[in-house]
Length: 228
Ligand SMILES: Nc1ncnc2c1ncn2[C@@H]1O[C@H](COP(=O)(O)OP(=O)(O)O)[C@@H](O)[C@H]1O
Ligand SMILES: [Mg+2]
Image 1 (cartoon, rainbow, N blue to C red):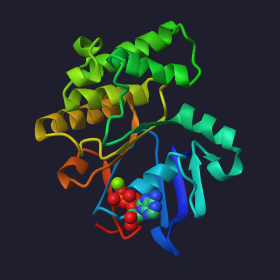
Image 2 (image 1 turned 90 degrees about the horizontal axis):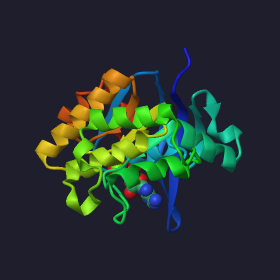
Image 3 (image 1 turned 90 degrees about the vertical axis):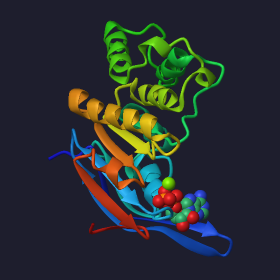
């Protein structure tokens, strides 16, 4: 079995003043292609730290992480950046769209940052069209973020995260800033992306009902994955 993401005995300590605060205390997990995994846990339990480490945004203090079989610790900073850009898309609670670009511009800029062709191939264009349809944002593409609802902004942010066809989508409380209607829409879209594109997803939520749309749920407490 080749996993999309794997973590082995990952710890993370943050220096705070003179002391080290343990955010992760030995986390292991493995995510298979096509899985939709949810992570729940109280605030401060280490969920975001784990996601940042899996996403290659921050290194673990100890332990190892593999993405598509490549261990972050075994490659250079440049290699890590390249692996992250190729394999991982990330969605955060705050959508972080660029205010001066319309929705289409916000999505396409991710393709440019990844160094893809300025003129998209037919395959890229077809993928963009598929995402737009799945996410239901076709009639919002020429709107700027301030003209969009929170749920629409998050769906644009999801399209941006997926435009380069990453194998793994990491989402850190993607519905945390949304009302229940928009939250339901975004969760529905996540399930649909998994079902129709086979998108592998790891989603953090502190809402147990939201977690239930995934195939399985990991529970975190005090920097560890614990039994439900
Ligand atoms: N950059 C940081 N510096 C110091 N402590 C941090 C930092 N980021 C997170 N922490 C601490 O690590 C622990 C886990 O935080 P976090 O991963 O953000 O948890 P969660 O996402 O579950 O709320 C908390 O005690 C938090 O205060
Ligand atoms: Mg968090």
